Image (cartoon, rainbow, N blue to C red; front, side, top):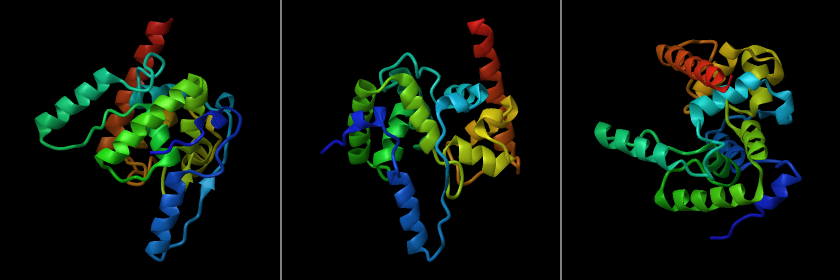
Length: 209
């Protein structure tokens, strides 16, 4: 396996991602148009509610691990085994960033191995805040919608820095299946997920004060 120059991400923002290119190819193959909504913004121009919501929902141990959350992975594997199905992958934000930037959406052992190597390199080359900034700018948040700024504008008609705690929690709730859910059409799953994330955000806020 060859690895890209992830250190360059410390200085430059990617002009595209593997996920964006994959979604473009899918659209072409199905004879559909692909309208990309993607606006890059620095982490400082995103609501702190959004960063807290995404960390609470996706990777609560982000600032404590080095790319892999072994406790989270163990919990995910245990739940998968108990339910007899593969649903929760236990991936960290760093692993998800590696997948979004460089890999296909397909799930197989070879891709997971490549993802692990890339996550390790990302953690070695970049500070945590840069990893989080990159992730929030490339994450998929709907059909053709990538990054926090485009997500905030598409779903709520406002910039990412103006998101409320409830709106931020809804966007975070979408992340496991961003093309299935619309935050303006609340399903029982989204509503419960939003409430859970708000609870985790508030609990984390109390513990840090």
